Image (cartoon, rainbow, N blue to C red; front, side, top):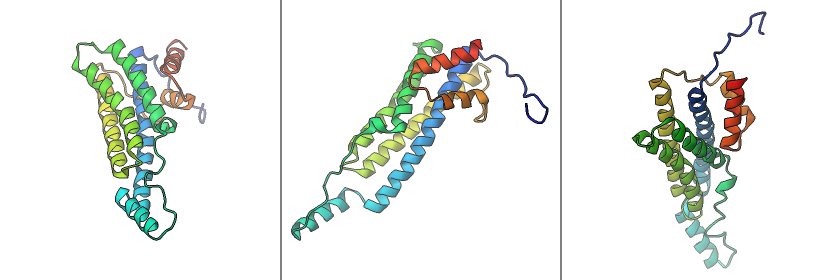
Amino acid sequence: MFCGVMPPEIPRATYPELAANAGLALASVAASLLDRQLARLAEDFEEDGGFTERLYQVRTAKRAGKDAPPLFPKHGGYQNLLSYQVSELLFDLTCRFCDSYISKRSRTHDQMVQAARSVSRNIAEGSATSGASKKGEIKLTKVARASLEELRGDYRAFLRHRNLPEWAPTDRRRRSLISSRPKTADDVLQWARGLHDG
């Protein structure tokens, strides 16, 4: 209750509405994480340069008889990136969503699954490439971000074509999913059942 006024009652959502909005919520979290990751990568590139600058530093140090920084710095470790973890969850959820609500013969089914897969796989490939090419890592992370936008568009189209509402970023159902920090698609399903049956 706020200032003596009860919030309006939210009608019980159907499972397709819950599932599509869950996909959009997780996609928004992944987008925010990727935007921050891209900003950090750009700062690192501006500060440290790329492979050519590193190669020059190593050669100059070696010629001067000094210790040189590693030519290929540590890279990988993408499994620890929150953007990767959320995008993997989004991929798992999208596979279940498509199998449940989109005909397997539909091009949309394949498009959504491939877009979701592309997000996490490009994050992983970019991270693995980072030792040799910061520019490559940035490029692949941008591809992941673009795939995420494609996927968001498909979730929105699903809702629009079925006259189902897209929840606002401030919707309490959406916020409850994000604050529950699901780790698996089963966690998301449990959240959806709680909303649907509660």
